[in-house]
Image (cartoon, rainbow, N blue to C red):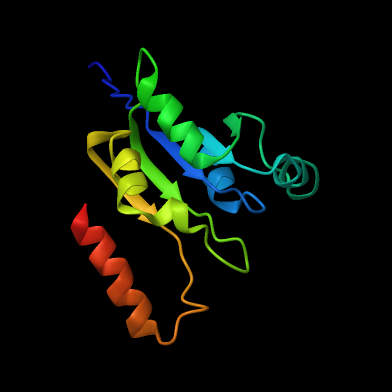
Length: 141
């Protein structure tokens, strides 16, 4: 009897790092993870103080620039999943939630890929206002 084992490598792009909880969990399960983080200090602290594993690809740059550069590369990376977690604790950078940027982000997905957007409703008049705005943006894609 033969044991047949199918190996399927998942690839994930995680924009926004924080303390690295999400990408660390993904890497623990062997998922090929690319982290895009604007602030080099955030990456350094996640590694030094929160044990972010080293087995990832780090792009320390603005997510809009990373995505544009990726789309222009000879071989455009294609991810199974994108975790878009760029909440700063005070505000979410508006340019990272435009229809144009989200469409560019979508272009980095494999055909059956998915984007998970981690967000906050703080700063909005009501949760309904936030939901309506977010829904309109998503539907425009």
